[in-house]
Image (cartoon, rainbow, N blue to C red; front, side):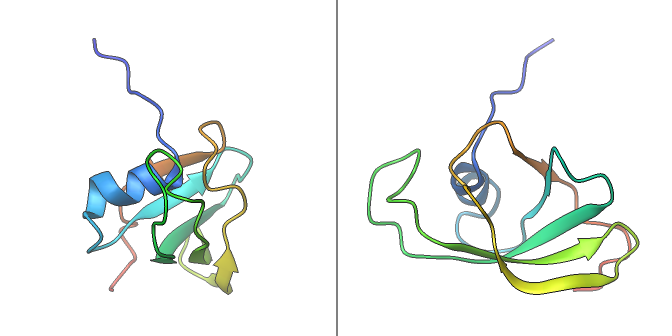
Length: 93
């Protein structure tokens, strides 16, 4: 069994979307929330932190109710806090 290599939000964004498409994440401290990444600022540095650009997301409950629009994702460069999740079944995008 291959162990999954941890990624930060920037790496998830690059590997899952190549800068296009959708990325959904959750925070290890959230019990009933998820976030859809709306934008990632310009990459000005090398991986894995890419110059630490700002990341904006909409935060939802797990049943699809918007909790906060355009939230700044704190510390997106950390490897311990954020996990990629599948697109929720309720999302109509």
